[in-house]
Length: 267
Image 1 (cartoon, one colour):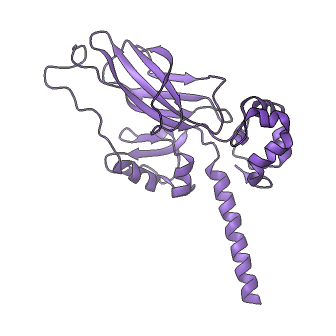
Image 2 (cartoon, rainbow, N blue to C red):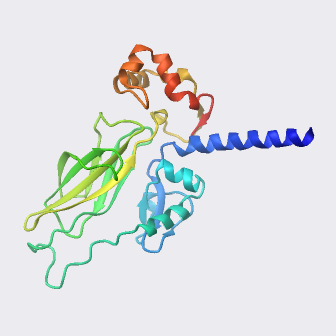
Image 3 (cartoon, rainbow, N blue to C red):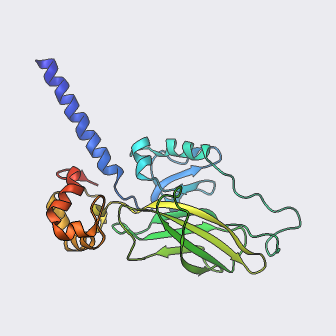
């Protein structure tokens, strides 16, 4: 009987740990991720670092929820950076001798494009990238979905290229729990439009909305009655339920979508 009780306790502890890890995996990480050397698959640190702390030879990578599940949430960067090296595509080779910036034959695309959630507790997205040559402006496009699935992009804006290569997406129609893929195209006075460079980002769970610290909090069905969250759900829907489902029977729709998060600590 003692052995059976001990085994039961171990199983319960394992399930609690798994639930805790799962809840953390889908939390919104803001401006912190892995600093990876794509060429050699090395991580500057096994744990997360602010993107501003990445040294020159390291590229900032914002882990996706699937990455956290795969490599853990304590020191995921070693495995993630090694994976990035396996699929690493070297930057475009320098132009042949005699061809460079300003040449009609040379239109280098943006490089090292990154997308981050730049304000904790919000779903706003900031893009930044590098360029080999000064561009007159950049076209910014967006697609709702994973990078591998996106074939049609909506043009958002044309950003002046003489300043910082950066774009902030503050579109109120951005959704929680959604992947977006962005494409940046450089435009040059002499050589015209470059090829596009793409990047993918996940906005995070709606439970992150307004949470500006790492403090843990518990969820129940009443959490979703918060005015801004309820309005969002009744106008946008979420998960398996559309907006009309929430308008028709809010309590049932909340239970159907979020029941697996009730009475769990969320970070």
